[in-house]
Length: 93
Image (cartoon, rainbow, N blue to C red):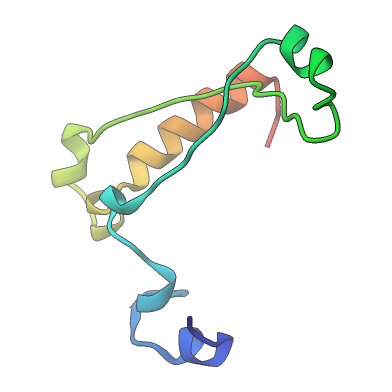
């Protein structure tokens, strides 16, 4: 566990991010239990339920290797995934 001070004082990677604010794009993880609305109601899980309005998974584009270090660490891929989720959910950033 790191303190906020340790995180903020770690070596700069690219403004404004420090080393301890970054991880390789392969180091992500998530888990979700996907079930029907009927199941949620039957088991009284409404207070814990989260409705997924969009989901997206992308991989590197050719531009990843043609542009900046931001592209190399997944900038274009992350933007494409976010744009897809915004379109699916109807959210306007």
